[in-house]
Structures are given as C-alpha cells and as structure tokens.
Image (cartoon, rainbow, N blue to C red):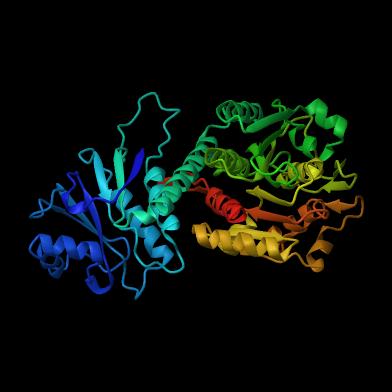
Length: 496
C-alpha cells in the first residue's frame, strides 16, 4: 500500500473518497467546517438528519457532495467524549479502513490527523492511521487452492495536514505504522500456518529468509546435538517424543552502538502442543498450532525493527520444539537437568513452554543483555484472570514492568502486571528435584512466571503471557499478531 502526505487543499483534490471527522455532539472539526461551507452547508444538513451515530468510529458515506472534487465524502465520528481519547482515535482509524474496503475505491485522502488527542502527537496519529490501513489488507489463504478476491483497500492513501512543518512528524508515523503492521502480518502468517508446515525447522528457514531480506539481521541456528552439548535437558525433554527435531533460533540485529547492551526477546516456539503424555482433550486441539505465537511475535518485532533501521541492538531468540506423545516422550515424574544446572521434576508434560524457555533464558547470558523479555502462550490460567483482552505481565524489575505497561497503553496493546511473591515460588517445591514444573491449580499463571524467574535472576527480566490475546476463536479464528505493537512501542520508546 502506498501512503503519502499532502498539504494541498483537500477539497480540490480529485479522489475517490475524502475522509473527514465530526466532533463531539456533531460539532464539525476545522477541516470539515471548511468543507461544509464550500458545499453550502450540505454536510451539516446531513448531520441534522441523525444518520451519524455519536459513538467513536461511526461513519456515514456521502456521494457527490456539492463543490467538492471528491467522488465521496466519508464522515467519521470522534465520539461523544469532550476530547478524543486514544481508544476513540484507534476506533476511527479502524472504521475508516473498513469503510474503504470496497473495490470501487482506489484512492483516498484522509483528513483526520491534527486533532487534539489526549497526550498523543502527530507521529502517533499518523502511525495509528497507517497501521490500521495496512493491518486491514491482511488475509491468509496460503493453504487454499482458490484464492478469494481481495476485500480490502489497497490503493493510494494520502494523509492531509495543512501546515507542512508537521510533515516530518507524519512521515515518521507512517513508516512506523507500516513497519509494525508488516511485522504483525509476518507473526500472523506464522501463527496461522498449519503445524505440518510450520515446524521448528520451518521457523529456522524463516529466520534465514529474514536475514536474506535484511542484511542487518544475522541468524544462527542450534541443532539438537549442539543443545545437548550445552546441557539443555529441559528444552530437549519437550522434543523427545517428536520426530521433528528442536531448534534454538538466534537472530541478532545490531543498529546501536557496538558496546550498547541489547534488548533480548525470547519467544516460545512450540509449533504444536498435544500436551505430550499428559495429553490434551481433542476438543480445540487444532488451536495448539498457535502455541508458537510468542515466537511469531519475536519474528514480527525483528522484522519491524530491521525495516525501521532502529538505532538499537536487539536479539531475538526462539526456542522451537514440537510436543508429542511417543515411546520416547518425557513422562510425568521424570527429572531433567536444565542448562543452568537446576533439576526439574516434570509433573505435567503439558507445562512444556516453561521448559523450552528456561534453557533459552540461560543461553542468552552470552549476549550480556540489558533487559530480557520472554513472550509465550504459557497458561490457560491467564485467560481466567484477564480474559482475552489483556496480556499478563510479570517482572523482577519495576522499571521494566512500568515501561512495558506504558508501551502497552500507548500502543493500545495492553498488559497488566501480576505478582511474583515468595509465597508463589514455594508452590514449585519438589521432593525429588530443585523445583517442579507446575505449582498446582492455584495461581497457575503466576507460578509459571515464578518458574521462569528462577532462570532469569541475573537479568532485568519480564514475562508476557499472551495465551489470551495471541489468537481469536470462532468466525474470526486466527492469529492476532499481538504483542508486536507493544514490543515495538517499547523499543521505540527506548530509542527516543
């Protein structure tokens, strides 16, 4: 999609669709007032008829508005609040992207940037517009023999701003929004692929492809033999029952100063999770192809970072394995030794994500990280706690937790912090090993975080449990690409 800027009078631009905003209580915003006057108050007359609801993102499409060069005018409501909230503006952008999804609209002029939005500058506004437009172009039909016709706007979009002194800010936002949406698309593709296609080895090939596309990314793949030499008994205990070999995928992006410590992102890449010997019920098991969405978000963030050429050092590590039952699979009650030397009693083989992650968290010491963030579809318990709207956040560092919370709020990809108190750690006590891999039915998400914290004591570390937000069910079934927006907002904030 082509997204450009214009300072020209939007009322005189020949376009298939001109998008204007209408403020609180149907009060016309500045640009819309000019359009209304030029049209002989045509717009205000239409609004008096009550066709535009007061909710943020409500739209009404008008055709052949007098004295305007545009074939159509799309009016979008800013909502009934006294001021436009970031959530309201995001709803407006998504509504615009949806309204443009008709084959007859090949180009548009968008005149909604420049509004007074709570604590949000023009870069954020243009980024939100661009991200919504590019996100809307996403579709997944790689496994279909017949491709459905495109049902989205994929033409030329022009963002209007009157004062050209703001052009740089808007251009920056357009680049950021497009890159974030592209990263989300990669994450969604990897999540949506069938598990017989998206295997650990496939993820390794995708990492190499990313290196080929962006020379700023260097990729290294560790085989099971190499992991065995390093003592990664926890990770290898998960892949033991599968014919598919595990891989540890390491992607390095060096855009910052040579001596600058990197941000390390660690993704759970269980490409299919049967539960192993502690096998899951068959209902909904097909959705366990999404158990690698943490890894997918690492891929998406690495792609976006490289596209934007951010002045920062980032390492993306993916612990990729397939969890299957077989005669060689790890059994409940088995004791394995992690790379850190800590022994683990595997009480439940379906609590496998923490086993692949703990060895990865030990391995990344070689990068001397500034901060470490792991991302995983780790527990169903986080859905019980937070539903399908919010990512669970746990951390051993208050500043890192605050920074991620702010990034989630800024990007509308929100998270909520849960505690890691000593009382929860005690639930992981084992009679036969240093710790157990589950802590009982109470506080399942927190005890999973406590388990990981045992392998991240040397770092400023945070854990994002995305089990509730990584994919959708039902008619909209598919990967969401979250939390790529939160991760990118965090990295952008560090750069600034």
